[in-house]
Image (cartoon, rainbow, N blue to C red; front, side):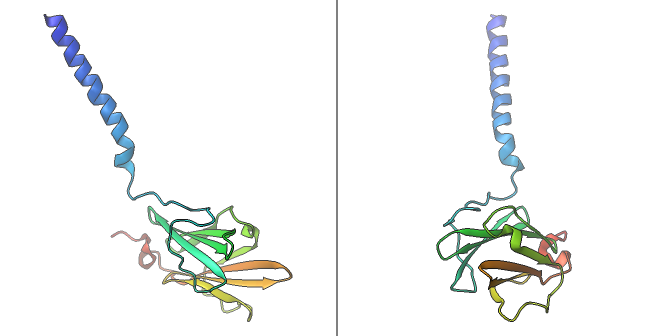
Length: 151
């Protein structure tokens, strides 16, 4: 009879260990995963300041991802920003034509059209010679006030 009780305990322990292993990835997530990044028509609000572009913002674990699509849904570029810095993501037809400026740039061409602006980031588009250039300007230089500080 002790063999049967020992087997039951082993089974219960194994079931508990398996349940814990399955649950661990859920405990590690700090926010709901962003969805739709890279898609033509993501399930996100269009926050563009221009009728010529669609801009979508995704947030995950303190990083803000900004995707720029044209009116036909073609992805042109995507940028990630966090704590007063930004990087260009390798996606979109104009990813190689994105510049990032860590300070407020007054040198934007007169033809530049602001397509997105929030408290920390501004993005302007300039079209010339059949291509589009995007200039990302970080408006907030203090990482604490830009959302990367300890809260």
